[in-house]
Length: 73
Image: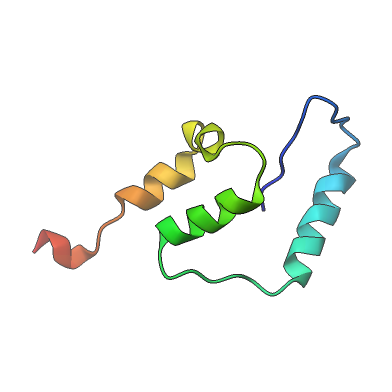
């Protein structure tokens, strides 16, 4: 779940995040053949540049660094 926050955003409490997650989980998940295609699909839906997200993303660097165990054999 991605949530963009802009200058006019007002924090309304944890219930807002709970409702966003609930609404997201009601929808059918989108599937992509690769991480790159998933990132591209996400980038088309967000207003902020993807670079803003990736600069602070620990998960993305972890996922991009994963290798199959057979790569070390």
